Image 1 (cartoon, rainbow, N blue to C red):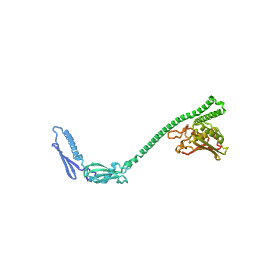
Image 2 (tube, rainbow, N blue to C red):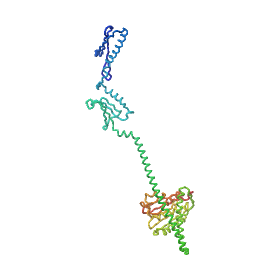
Image 3 (tube, helix red, strand yellow):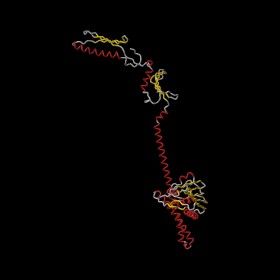
Image 4 (cartoon, one colour):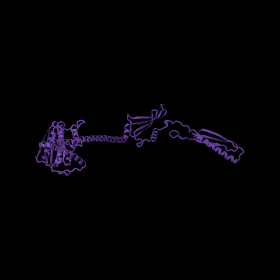
Length: 444
């Protein structure tokens, strides 16, 4: 047989002979033949045993011969198989090695999704190469070597794995994890922001409520103290004997009690509005008849109040003079009074207020209250109708109040089916406009 190539076979033949004379010592010869030539010959002698029967001697002799014969045959056939010899690399076919390499490394898109190339090198000679379909190594490709044997020698055997840089591949494979992590981080950031925002809002509301309590206490004490002083003068200083002075003091007491009543009414209205239990009495309200007394009251309030040095001029224009709107008379009066009061408080020494009531369209009536006061910054305009909100100068409130006036105005206008708008320029003044739908009846 041809013993070249990858599939070598152990070939040959074994022959043996034995003398058959029972009276002499037995000789056995074993020969190993290959290619017509005797490559190995083994001879052994079996001695006969005396004083045994013929049958016993024959049987024992056959057993001994068989055992020795089997041992010699095994040694002759397989004696050389225990020796490991290094294969001659030139005897291997590169295509067959490539297939074996591919099969052993389980190269395939389902198992190795990364584009790669594997080479088996002996020295500098490429014995086999396996490449992922369509993959051509780039200039940036990385090579990883694994030396099998003969490291550092000319016939060094090694595997060379070629891969592209794995950074983008790893990131793409981690895309799901990264996206999920980013989503969770965004949720945590939003929750953290929401908690901080809520805490700051609660802190602001707490400060507003504390400030409201302090201011409302002052607002309640002022009219009570003035009314008490007026009545005390009438009773203890003989003012009843002077009708003119008595009338003056009684008028002051009446105005302060009206102020106190209006303040209490606003607070109660806000409480009822929160509980959705407020009832409105919608009637036709004559503009001029309601607004003119309010102007007189506020002018008198300035003269008898803390800022007697203020000069207040209030003008009223109603077109037509008999202009009517559907509203709750008491709440309409409080709304206009609040706007006039704010115009006076947030102005300098010389106050000029213009009140205009006119019919804009067939079904819409406008009432505007404009002043030449300090105005409101544009960034604060969206918040002026919030409950308890007051415009500050830095961290201080420059004007006394309780932060319910404009909230009351907006709440009641919404309740009556109207609306309120504002235009303001810092240093030039503000203009508040009430929008009423003429003839629209709103049930409280």
